Every structure is written in C-alpha cells, then in structure tokens.
Image (cartoon, rainbow, N blue to C red; front, side, top):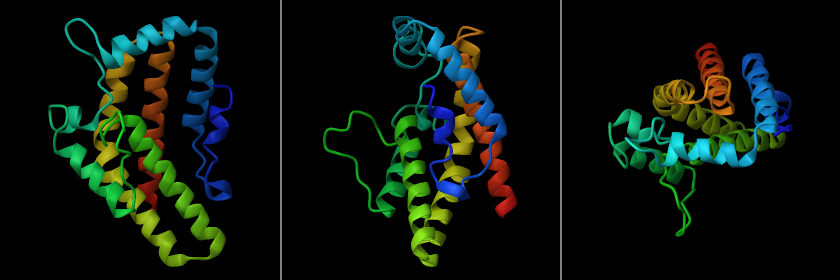
Length: 183
C-alpha cells in the first residue's frame, strides 16, 4: 500500500494534481499498514460482502442508483465498456458496476489518453477524454460519494475503511472539480 499515492500519476505529466486525494491516500496507506491483515479482511467482509442485517456499503453502482443490485446501471456501465471495445471475461466474478471494475475502466481510459498524447492522435485523445468525462459525470459521481459516505459511516472511526471512504470522497470532489473546469 505504500506505493498507492504515487500511482495517481499513472497518466504521466498530464495527470491532475489532487492534493486532498493524495493526502487521504497517504493516511489510508499508513493505517492499512498498521492494521493486521486478518482484521482488515474481516472488516471488508462486514462492510461490503456479508453482514447480519445487510451489508452497510455495497460496492455496486446499481445499489445506489437503482435501489437494487444488478439494476439498469450495471448494463449502462457494460455498454460504456463495449463502446471502448472491452468485454468482461467469461469467468468474471463481478458485474460491470462493481467498484473495482469501474476504476479499472477509468484507468484504461487514462492510459488510452496518455497513449494518444504520446502519438499525437487528437481524435483518440478526444474520444477517450469524452468517454472518461461521461462515465464519471453520468455515473461514478452519482453513486461513489454515497458509497464513500456509507463506508466511512459504517467503518471503525479511526480505521482503514473509514479512511478509504474519505479518500474516495476526496477523489470524487477533486475529479468533479477538474471536469467542471474543463467544461
């Protein structure tokens, strides 16, 4: 986890500066490193996988946007991936609206933008930038802050998952601000 804050620079020199997100990730990494792995795994299961009375922070867009798992938001996300030529593997264990899948898609788009910049492909850069903005504004920004809130509220107050919720909230705020400035 100690390398995570540096990974925000994955898009190269063009990567935005997100000071709140980077500070929250550094704090998160410090807390993760200090907590026993077995305790982290148990807390993750309680918060996001299986808990008596229900999971307090389901990591799926459809839960927040549609009010039920596997709702229309899942198919909308899958369609966005298909537009970029991506498809889930036959043995994929999670639906298209699972948080990790959605972040992997954002990473793909950022890498695509970087490659387009390096090769001078303005059309590819425009396409990937537009896809990123649409996915974030129309989808992620609508549910990720709610998930971050639920995660932070249900987690141990000084624990790693409360900090993860704070980092997600900071990222959403900074990315939304960046996209608004771009128009």
